[in-house]
Image (cartoon, rainbow, N blue to C red; front, side, top):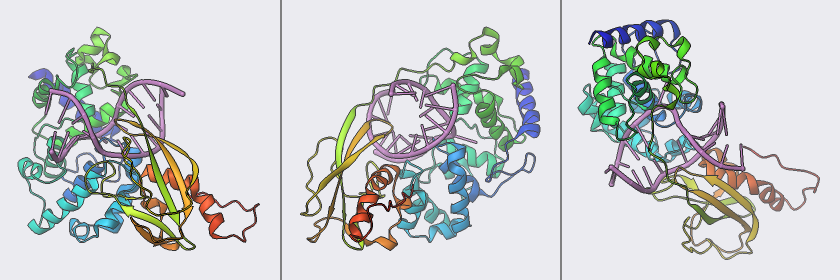
Length: 357
DNA sequence: CATCCGTGGAA
DNA sequence: TTTCCAAGGAT
């Protein structure tokens, strides 16, 4: 118990001197932070790097300064602003959560109340509780799993070790400054106790680290072997007219759910028909890697001469590639020169349209 | 408990 | 080029 107290004090002391300055974060010792900004940042940061989140967070808080503003937004605009960040169920849950919170009047102030909201699970509910409401909840993310695994030299591989990690992390969580402590643990994991080459020499808690003492810090946490990714293939059709492009909104469930996209086949051989009768030309291949499979996507293009049986035509000057998820953005940038050239037959061959991503 | 769900940067 | 993985949640 005394050791755990030493560790949390050393960590907070280190955080006071080395905390990262981040857009959604208040300075060490400042205590509570706007729950809306904490929630928004935590959802964006789920399985996503700080570097990737920063610009999205600034954009969202600029467009929607409060949870009530976000609750009033159109689904399609939120999806468009989320495009490129990945894991699109987060964006759908984000809007649903904002509307529930707005109807309630404010965020729930207990962990259980928060955990009942869409898109808020064990980690995020604990993080909001600690950071926004100064509640001494046990915050365990990937950083904390790594730090705890090393401090106690846990040999049990993840995810089997999770219950033990949660228990040990709870023993370390201090009653005072729980929000700063949670962020200190995560900063330590992100900057010192890193996955590959931990900087044990400058770690504020290296004295109490069993893995460092045993010389196995870089080997922990052990993890169960992961499965190989299957290779899949599909086709996407980018149809256009003189002044419009054919797009659709994908179904809410499943891969890229709810995002703006070009009509495509499934990714497992399902043979859907093209969205219109046209002279489709093979315009190249896009290779993309998802979490659990790799995809080779054949990109077909055509100038449409008959009404599409699927999707909707969007005026080219109202079409923004930034509203597309990464996969579709890749397909668009591949064919955009072709599309632009064929829209303007008088364009000189020497004029190369610029790509927009 | 295992699987599904994105993306891009680093080593 | 390949591998790993980053502040997880839903089912």
